[in-house]
Image 1 (cartoon, rainbow, N blue to C red):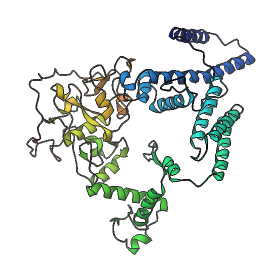
Image 2: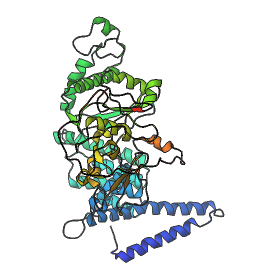
Image 3: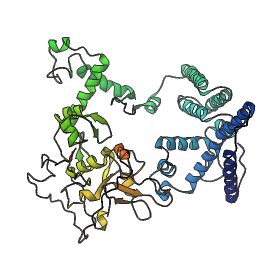
Image 4: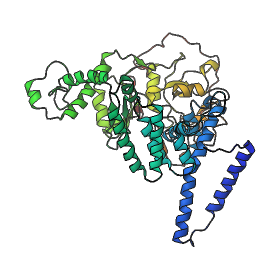
Length: 501
């Protein structure tokens, strides 16, 4: 692959010339162009579009040599791309993966090494294949069994590139699948390393009907465990939600067996639910970020009273309110009380550095997950972050001074890095460091999409001036006194026109 050595000034001048050419091109009038002229221009544009990613791969690879994500003000490279260019984390991951495979590799010493997918990189730089071809080739090479030697692996890639030059992505995928099938027949039986490489359980996006699809590839050991659990809990008559008193232990009655009209797939679904409930109710699951492992759901008091609307779990799963009420029969009730006008949490304060369980429930109800823009980590994977002033700097662990943040983002708040503040709506605003600040939004709406429906002229209420910090409160293990009127206690005072979680 030919790459001309250019100075920094040459590179910037070349990019400036490209931008000027694009400006000139977009200003052209195409109304008088003939069909043949339009087709020729579109062909040339398609070739340029196919070639440009090759340059981006090289620049991204070089950027990762020159600096680190932490120096850029982010927790990883995927975060750098997603924040600076406002792309999805999935697209950022794809670009970084392509750069790792298609850009020259940077050794510790010596000249750069060829790309991992050398033939693919050359074809892309020449504009012979497009991004869809690259995706098929990358995934197909990744599916090669572990017993395939380097020579065969390289030849497999070259054959795919040669095929891709003349066909579309579907035909290329069909050819790759056929070759992989033939290779698998010639090789030895899969070993434990191949199985371990392929294991996984994938949760797909929640559907419009609130159902969630799972895709699983289990190791023999994992399936052996669930095989016996299904034999017990997915047997006819077991864990049937249609029974007035479902059988979850012992042996179901003959009537329960005869009245069980579920399919095997439905029985296995209900068994998964029952085994999960048993695990949660056992008390042996330990703690998750300071709370016992349990399902936490946030919803409004109005939705509970009207039996309409939805609830949202700490992991971001949407639940119809009828199922929220049904699940409440299996758990303790916790009420998170908010001021209806300002969104401020009421009367929950803490003299310890670590937020109390009740405060975590309040934060889950308010924030729903990590509050840093672009972060999709749900509330189950977050910590309580001191928004206005860190504990070490004299900050207080008051609910109105706290926000949820995942551990890497929590650590990113420091001098010269990210900074946080609480706005008038009690939303956590994150200001990026200069390297990442392009004027993007300061508030994360991923976990609370209803915020996007707010009218544009809905200004936040005026924020009251902060109280003098005074002397910082020293951490203590002593718990504050509780009473029947203490909102930190489950079953405390009912929220007037408030919200419940």
